[in-house]
Amino acid sequence: MTDSGGARGLSYDIDGLARIRSAVRLPELELFRVAEVDQPDLVIERRALISGTPAQHGLPTYVYRERLGAVTANFDVELGPPVRILATPLLAHSPHVLYTNIVEPLLRFVIAGRGRMLLHAGCVSLFGQGIMLSAKTDTGKTATILRLLRECRGTFLSDDMTIIGPDGTASRFPKPLTISAHTLKAVAASPLPAHRRAALSVQSRLHSRSGRSVGKWLGERPLPIMAMNSLVQAVIPPPKYMVRQLVPAEMGQTVQVRRLFLIERGSPALAEGVGRDEAVEQLLSNTADAYEFPPFKTMAPQLIVGGLDFAAVQDAERRVLTEALSSIEVVRLRVADFSWPSLVRAAVAPEDLAGPANGHLDGPRAPSRRLPVPEEAQP
Image 1 (cartoon, one colour):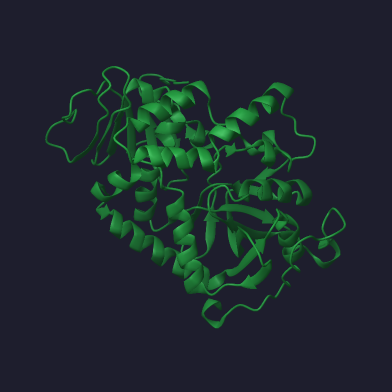
Image 2: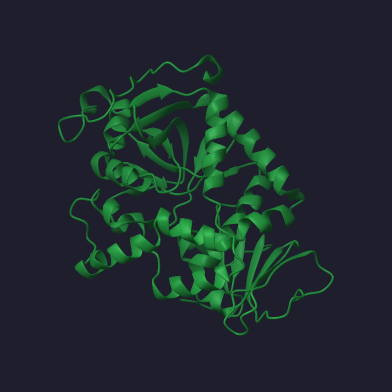
C-alpha cells in the first residue's frame, strides 16, 4: 500500500494550488500525480516516532502521540515552510487514514492561503451548466451524482470536496468515491465484479455514518484512536472507486457554477430558493461536518500554515463563499426518499429533456428554471 516512488518520493500538484512530495502513495490524489514538484507546500516522510518530543527540535511542531510502542500511529506536523508531516510506519500503511485525517486538513489551510476554499460539495457539469451539490455527510450526495452522470452523461469534477473561487469557478478535486451497497443501486449494470459487491455490505457498514459516529465517540476517550482506525482500515479498507469504474463520465477541470443544491432528507418535502447569508452558513456547517473526526479538533487550533491560523482560515473561507454565491443560485431540496436526481435534472435540463428518466417524479414539484431567490441572494 506504500510506494517509495524513488529517492525523492512521489509528487502531486493540485493544479498549482498545492504541491506535495510524499514518501507514501496517496490514492485520493492519484489524478494529481506528476513526475516531480519543486518547492512543495507539504512534504510527507515515514519516521519512527515513539517519544513525546518532536522529531526535530527548534521548529514549531504539532506533536501527536499514542503510546503503544511499535504499534502506534504517531505523527508530527512541522509548520515549515514547507509543512512537513512525519508519520509512523502504521500510518504509512494506512494511506486513507493519513490522507483524510492529516493531509487533507492541511490542504485546507494551504488552499485558503491561495484565495480559494476546499468546500464539502460535489460538482458536475450537466447540459453545459456547472452544478454543485452539498449535504451533511452520508446524506446521499454520492448516489445522486452517480445517477445524474449515468442519466445525463455529464462531466465529473468532484464528489466529496470541491475547490471554489470567489468568482464562482469550481476546480476539480476528483478523489475516489466512497460507495455503499445502497449507493451501488444508483449505478445500473455496474462493472464491479461479484466479490467486490459482496464485500460492500461489510465495508459500507464499517465506513458509514454510524461507523464514523462510533469512531468520533471513541476519539473523545483516552484511547489510541488513530492506531485503531489505521489497523481497522488496513484490514478492511474503505470501499473506494474512481468514478469511471462506476459510470461513464467525462472528466472536467474547471467550470463556472450556476446552481448549487443543498440536499437533505426529511418532511415536508420542499424545493425553495435560499438566500446568500443562509447558504453561506449552511455550506460552512456542511464543511465543518466533514472534519469532525479526530485529531482535527485538537490539531487545527494549533496550526499556523502560510501565516494563517485556523480562525483566519475560517474567515477566508467565509469571504470566498460570500463572494462566490453572489453569482450562484442556491436551492434547497428536501425529500423523504432519494429522488434528488429527478429534481435536479428537471431544474437544469433543456425543456425537451427535463422529464425524469423513469417517467415520473417523486417528491416535491421540481423548481422552475428561474426559481425566485430571496433578494439577498440575487447577483
